[in-house]
Length: 339
Image 1: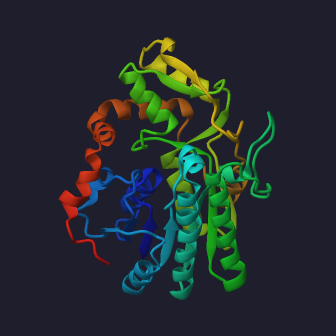
Image 2: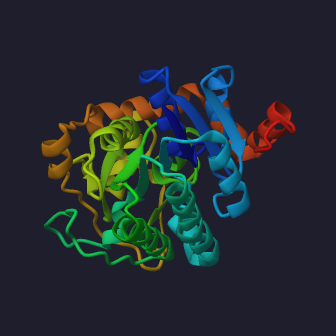
């Protein structure tokens, strides 16, 4: 079995690469990543000598490269994590998000269709549903109502994926997850940013009143869900993946400060970002009932393990903050990455 995992040097993608190699040691994994600022090969350096793992640097918007790659490798499955994902950046540079998240997805879909892939799986987000009030949950039948250029680009990609199933018969699944947390999370995101700032006793910036609510999902539970959908999901179906761990942002920040024994005086409320969704919450009943998925982590266990991981792996995130992580690719791979 040969898998193409795109965006496999990012947070969720790299965790999925490691999960699949550990669970299916006979599978061949090709990891394609453009190595933009959020891609970090140091995350996967322990896999470099694995004979069933190969990394290639490339952009999913490069149609010539993608077509050659599919022709050479003869993939069975494609799992697309490749995406620009930081909402703040989408507000200042929406064109980049449209290019990667929509046009890049179309390039992958065309190659998958033309090469008779057994299944294409699109990893999406609950943000495509928009925002919730104080009650209710997103289900797979909730109308899409994205509120940021990021979520709009992901919704557009989802619609393309669906259309290739309906029009061309390409076997597909779409997963839509709640906020992930865990090891190897890029330091611009809420939990790692707050952990690192607290450790350094720097101010912790919190948007608005801090009462925006997110449903938190441990990245390993997410990887297990994607694995199940890839192998057992019904063709053409969407599956929501949620952790049933709703917390306000300020609760998350205070939990981190309490664990690290730091003062809440480090908290600084800052101007809210435009279009900031108030609440997300996922109904994962379909995934549970059809495929038997159950999350392994409670939030209390997962957040403690995650904070400890950042304490124990300071060199990893220090290299990101300093920019040294971007040198790792050239030192390790040189010119051996041509498709």
